[in-house]
Length: 184
Image (tube, rainbow, N blue to C red; front, side, top):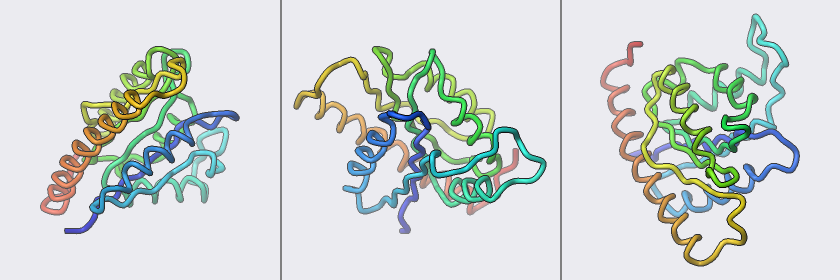
């Protein structure tokens, strides 16, 4: 069986963000699984235009290609003002068919809420794009202080659960798309 291709999308573009570090931590956990190929898609590496252009730019096309190549996604998102960042929404909107019939999981972070308000809104967005969001989330409270052995073990367990769900849905939906094209 071919490996499941997971794109880990870093959803924050702010200076001083922690999303890039969390994404790389998640990738380290995921790479322990031989049946997964994991790629980081960092939105800071794309020069997206300030307004939606009539024709896609090279950066838009490159991002859409990354989305199209993936079998599943993990969106690493902060929660800003009970929502997710605008650059993440902009990037999501550049692709359409490429999201369809693929699973999406979340690593979210915030202050006390662990980013769950952002995840709730992203679930609505991905449902509109015909993507399948998985139930469990890896949520991180930035105000919790230094991680303890117990909290680190809990986060690793949460990553395992998320990867199990992405693996199941990713393989099932990939087989489904191969057997018959998805119609929206």
